[in-house]
Length: 300
Image (cartoon, rainbow, N blue to C red):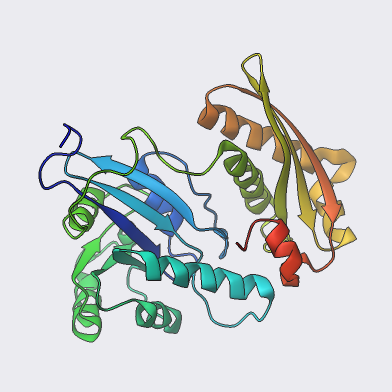
């Protein structure tokens, strides 16, 4: 084996799963040390299965960040999000369920029941920094161990990056022995074009999450490069004319702010200048339209 694939090197896929808003994407970004998967305070911010690649001397983890599994919501989008999460679980060598410190809900039980018991199942208790008295967590941890019997339980804080090394080492130790699939400096298999669309959508969610938390999506129509600068054209799609007005804002101020913030994130991530142009258009009821979901990349 090469120096990057010594004897005993391990490589495999790990699904990060959980109910909405438990910090899956934030945890992935913290482990990678790079802002790959968009995160926000609203559930269902993550809509795609995102591959994040972490390479350590002892192994390579291919993380699958997934949408939050949830009950209710009969729209086509809701069904697709749950399908995406379940598909990742079926393909993974290891599953890590992220739960919120001190809180286990019926949706957490739904996620746990979806995991394949023939493969390692780990539980990462996130947001432990929010619990001032850590001893108060002991009954919660004990109850999880008795009722769920996971292969291991880890206490982590994605926000403060606490406990991440233990979790990473625990995952690697349970992956199959094998050579690395990706080069050690690769962080994802997603294109910059895809990431650009997600960066715009992240700003929409952060700025307008109260007004239209689930009604917007982003489609990149052009991604070209010349003279060390990327030119990106993207459309923010919403479901009603009133939502279009909200995204544009008075005198176009909101759209300009979204574009400026997204451009700064892109320039940092892509390490070059970016010219970003945005439009806002309406496609009625797109989130309950299977054809629209396919067009916008939510289905294969």
